[in-house]
Length: 333
Image (cartoon, rainbow, N blue to C red; front, top):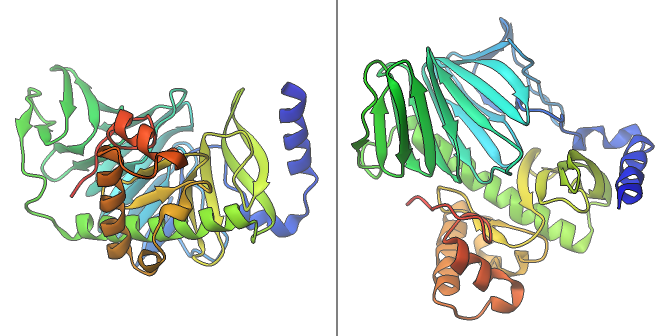
């Protein structure tokens, strides 16, 4: 098994440089998308197709009249609103730590493998994200909201666990309060929803290409038998991995592609593996709204125990109740 894994790594090192756009760093902090003006350590970011800025340890990234999407560990997206800032405290996949210094940051977690950790820091408060879900920190109100998922919050005032539909203020005693996740959507929320829809569309395209092999060989990053590592696979998804980032040249962006089963983002959009993408109705692939609708129908069918069990969706979805097959979690809206 180890020799097979070593062979994949050796194959990666000998691939031609023309596949460089399919490489993603073995750490968190890749700036996937910028809309408007954004700055990395004071220098304006100018993204180009297939090339993505990298936020290194202790570097600051901020937006002005714009928004940004940053890739953390595989399956985790951090999205920033206007006039927002973060500092990368640690870009290690095993212990990713991001400080929210200003504005607002929303984190979509599609999956967190057990050997990864995601922590958001606000002043002296540490927020550890534990499950598939949707989380938001607002510095203007010193507030954490958990739309779906589970997070532990630790500060000088104590420790608190927040689950779906709960919030706490971070500038005093930690107290869990209810909030209505379906009310008061703002521009950042709606933009994050749209971005999640595009990621889902790119996922369907990528998973279909992986299924048919139309992209040829490329680079991928994900998880193998011996922890995180690079692998050689179709279009960027490494063989033997739980899943990884997949560069889609048609969309000019990375999407998350699980190696098996089917899941959905916290916004309700479908995320398919190469083996289950056939369950994405053809009509739904042209529109994020249609993808969300068809995903809801697939989830309903799986939870009721009908059809789809031959593809592995039925049992996985009914056990997990959300997220990826057998991984738990919950969908939003």
